[in-house]
Length: 180
Image 1 (cartoon, one colour):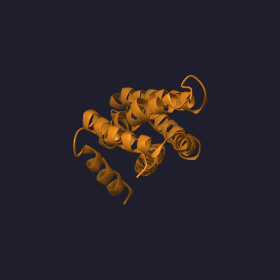
Image 2 (cartoon, one colour):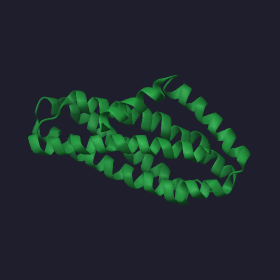
Image 3 (cartoon, helix red, strand yellow):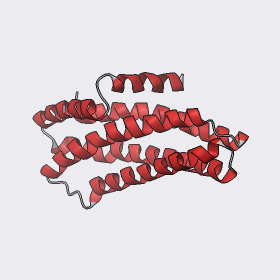
C-alpha cells in the first residue's frame, strides 16, 4: 500500500468523526447545552489521532520527503497544508478553552464551543479534499516505489511514538462506533 493511501484511509476515519462533531454542534445549537464529556471525546480524537498521529505523519515524514524531491515548503500545497494544520490547532484550542465555562451553561462559552467546532469541521473537510485531490497525487508523482515503502515504515514509527501501540486501532473503532 502506498503511503498516501494510508493517509487517505485515515482521512476516511477523520471524516466519520467530523460528521459526529457536526451533529454535536447542531445539537448544541438546538439545545443551548454542551455535553462536556462528548466534546472532550471529540477533542481527544482530533488532538490525538488527527493532529498528533495523522498530521505529524504528514509534517514529519511526507512533507519532508516532498521537499527532498523538489516541492517547496514555503509556498504552494505544502505551505497551505501547514497553515491549515495550525489553523485547526487554534480552533481546537478555542473549543478546549471555552469548554469548562460552556459546561456551566455560560452562553458565550457555549457559542464558542459550537462555532469553533463548526469552523473546525468546515476547515478539515476542505483540507482533506485538497490533500486527497491535489497534494497526494502530486506526492505520488514525486515518489518512487522505494519512497512509498520507506514512508509507510516511517508512518508506523510516528504512530508508535506519538500515540502508542494499539491506540490507532482504538480510535478507528471509536470513530466507527460514533458513526454507527
